[in-house]
Length: 208
Image 1 (tube, helix red, strand yellow):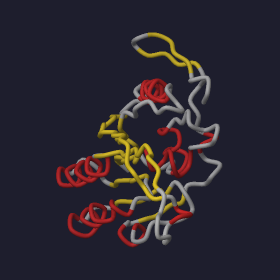
Image 2: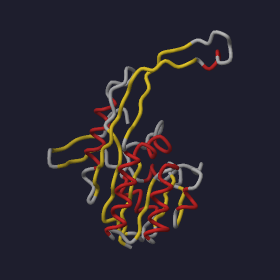
Image 3: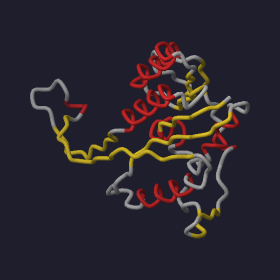
């Protein structure tokens, strides 16, 4: 079945990959493992370019190497949103409710645009008839409405691949089919340590 996959990159990372040894993930292999009968003509990967943090200055470099690995996959397209970080003043939890709560300055990071980009592409592709079925890899309830539009108003099947066991409310009801990714799946779908593209050879980041 002619399929387009829509991957919520940050949701996948924080729900299934962070803190594991599986971040060097071949997303095409993952999709084929879970849905072996689908023909993934296009895989749309939605993310944003991160900024260096005081405790992890090399994070952007690791991400760029991973995006380079993703670009070696046939049919994969990367759609970038924006990543912002700024200082905010927030109350300390242990002092809430006291007459003189204490505050701390923290670095707040936010990813902007990926959800809107994913939703827009999903609905547009459905209107254009570019797929026979869509698969959205996410656990973000903000994507319920675009999935519902595709399944109920446009009349095309759209499934959800949830990267974690805890379901976001409403996603299952909006989708034509719903799959929970097994925790062991990413470990079976890793890129080779050494890869090559048009620019030459490159290697999995050491800290990954």
